[in-house]
Length: 287
Image (cartoon, rainbow, N blue to C red):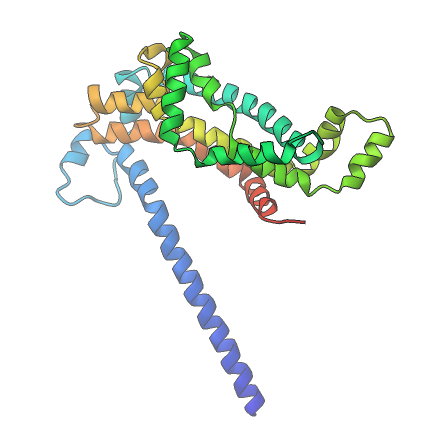
C-alpha cells in the first residue's frame, strides 16, 4: 500500500510539473506571438474602424484588404521588394562561396601560420560594428559605388562568425575520410563538394537562412549608401512610408506594409525550421 501511495504521489508530481511547464510555455508563446497577431489584425481593419475604437478590440467583424493596396500605392513597395530579393540572393550566394572556402581552408588545409591567421581573424569580431560601417562607407564612396547594387552587396559577403561556425563543423569530420579521398586521387574541391558539404548541410542551411534574414532586415547600411529610390530596399520603403507617406496617420496601412514584407521570412522559416534546429544542434555539438 505504501508503495502504491508513493507511486501515485510521484505520478501526481510529474503531472503537476508537466502542467506548469506547458502552462508557462503557452503563456510565453502568447506573449511572443501577440505582437504579430496585433500587426496582422490591424492591417485588415479599415482606417475609420481603427480610429473609432476608443478601446482597441482584439477582433474585427469587417476585415478589408484595402490597406495593402494603399501600402503598395503610397510608395513603390513592389520595386523595393524586388530590389531586396536581388540584394538578398546575391549577397547570400557570394557569402556562402567565401565562407565555405575559408572554413574549409582553416579546418582541413595545412599552411604556415594557419593558427595565427585564424586567431587574428577571430579577433575581428572584437571590432565595434560602427567602426566597420564607417570604414566600409569611406571605401565604397571612394570607389564611386554609392547607389549601386555592388555597393550594397560587397561589404556583406563575408562573416567572421559564420566562417568560425562552419570551420568547427568541418573540423568534426574525421581526418581518415580526407586521407582516404586523397589516396583515391580526389582533389580538395571535389572532397569539399562531395563529402564535407553534404555532411554539414544542416549547418550550411542554417547559415544561409540567418544570412537571408540579416539581408532582408538590413537597414543602416542601405540607408547610408543609397539615396536613389531605384536602389531602396524594403527597410527604406517602410521608413519612407513613415516619414513621407501616411504612416503617422494611417496605422492600418502601415501595418499592412509591414505584414507584406514579413511574410517571405515567415514562410522561409516554416519551410526550413527543422533544418535550422538541426544545424543549431549540430553547431553546439563537438566530437
